[in-house]
Image (cartoon, rainbow, N blue to C red; front, side, top):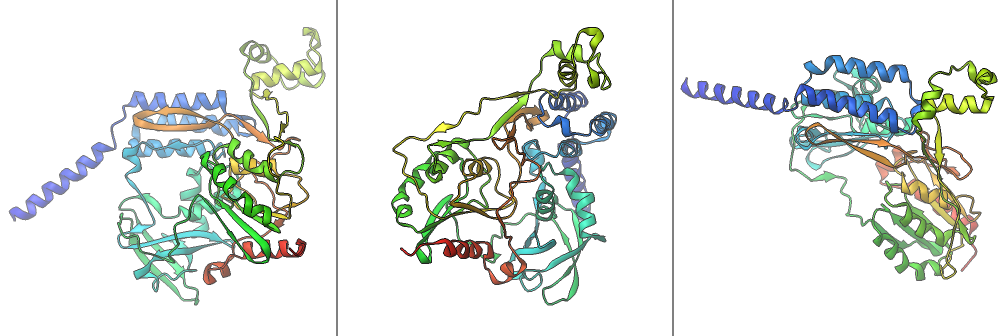
Amino acid sequence: MRKLLLLFILSTFNIYAFAQSLNQISRIDKLYGLTNYWQEVNYNFVYLNKVDKAKWNESYKRLLADVDSLNDFEYYLELQKLSALLNDGHTQVYLPEYLQKQLTQSEFGDFKFYTDLIEGKVVVVRVSTTNKDILPIGTEILKVNGQEVQQYMNEKVKPYLSVSSPHVKDKRAAQLLFRNTKGSAYHIEFKTPKGKTETLDLVLAPTENKDLYPQFPAVDTFSSKWLKNGIYYVKILSFEKSGIYDDFLKILPDLKKAAGVIIDIRYNGGGSSAVSRKVAQHFVKDSLIYGAKNQSRLIIPTDRALGSFLTAQDTLEGKKDWGLNKEETLMYYRSAQGYLYHTYPSLPIKIAKDVEKIIIPTVILTGSNTASAAEDFLIYTNDQPHIKRIGAFTNGSTGQPLTVKLPNGGEAWICTKKVTFPDGTEFVGKGIKPDVKAEYTFRDLLKNEDSVLIKAIEELKSRLQPI
């Protein structure tokens, strides 16, 4: 009896301690953090013109009213939900470390598996080796906690995701389907590749088990190899470090021998635009390389003040009784709305004469993870007749984030820079379109194949001259 009483006391103490750990932020700090973030977005977010302002402001006011009832974790989830209304991948809310530690993803003790979106279905793509017969690779998730999986993602996952492009949000929701606080319970209905429908009841719990099937070898950030038919394959996972360009220079002798090149940036999330430009310049036939057109919000308080007295009706003919023509009236009105932009100089950069060029049939592989500086790479190499893009639409997210401190070590990003192709063509929010569409398939998953790479090889072989 004494032992049971002691266990009860310890359990009660642990629950109390856990609850206390989620109530560290004062009411004032919560209100200040929320209001500061909301105002910084209003002042700096470059795509404010695309935001439903009524919904944005009502969500802010509703959260103001609810702050007292929220613990720290719930408060940050609501901030993430507010951020998600902006639909931008470079505008995020990051949890403080002590809250981040409360989360786990796809780990249910020794039962561990990961999901992804393939051909429109949420399927198991990796699983702990000991459980691969229970949840075979290719198993489709049908329902989660009694809801159809798509409905569950729409209601429980997507509202918290800050993502620019709809196709990326769909994929991210499938990948983060089982991300929640430790102890969260799931009733899962699934269908195996053989067509058998079964259920599982699992509870999120961190594990040290790293034994996953299928096993993937470690991959360097920069790697390359020869394929058949004189094709040279280059895989770049990041443009983050300047050393990437050093690695590229080392393979130039091989590239100069190649009949064709495949540059795989499907899983390149970006990094430095300067690094991506240095690599890109070797594949540009011209002596000039053209980068993106960049814009940021232009805030002039006096112009905003004048525009605050104008209406949309005034912009149709101009405020003639003020001596303002149509263009001037529109400028002041847009200034008050926050829709004026500064355009940065975007002169082409001259490529040095000693840069060795690789002007041979080239394929660049793209996917939904191709983002930011990797998308800049595609802009630099755009309209080159010897280059073809094969794969899926890119991530459609880039820009310069402003960092904003949030209570107890949290942080927010706010995108301040609009990036387009040099002619103004937009890709943020939809991705850069491939010349030839090819995506990872269900068959690729089951057979451990790469049909996108195979298509790139076939494309090059049809264009190659014998070497």
